[in-house]
Image (cartoon, rainbow, N blue to C red; front, side):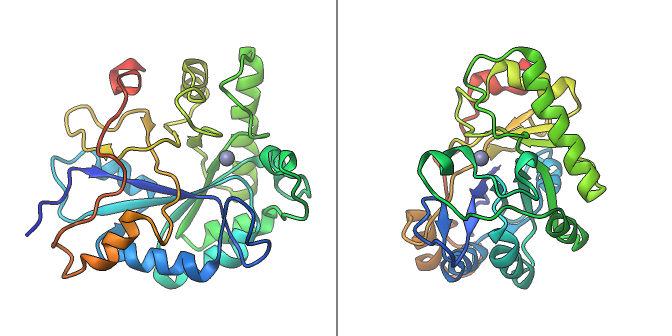
Length: 268
Ligand SMILES: [Zn+2]
């Protein structure tokens, strides 16, 4: 029996859709389903709240993995949600609240000249949360680039107003924040400090790495996520090829636990 790795990866996606499939962040629904089914051969998908609890343990009984979506793409309600429901996969949607119920384009989509990409409606977000399988958390109001220099009041407004707006829409607490763009530079000390001070309990980056079990200290304030894995990635291929039972040759995604020193729990 293969040893269950003492760490938990969190996969992140953006847009699952059959519309405008050439969009740079988009995956076709049937491909997405094939990826999830491959991953499920080795991993059990669990919610981010469950991951918080599991990270406190000394070891895992089974390999587990988390799933998140960023931005505000309404197509996810049409295409991703039915797949996730059918496969009973929990997921967190990190939503930039300023785009909900609008036709506005996300900054990067505007820059790249896209049009007609629809955003979530409040009703969709409410319905998703009411399934009990999904939660909606913050990705700031405007998808602010936190690697730039901002005064504290601006950053605070982005974090507080998105939290309030999404709590108003879903009626559920918003305590998790995915940092837009999510590189080390974007997870600035200012953003982390303010996120903590305005009541977030966990912040998520978007650069590689699995989250190591931390039974002594508990999970750090900042957890790491891994960008989308595609059908042709080594990870998905390994999930398909290595399958001889759940405990045999568990494929690993990401380069192993490597929580940067600046994100160590004691730093915050
Ligand atoms: Zn984003």
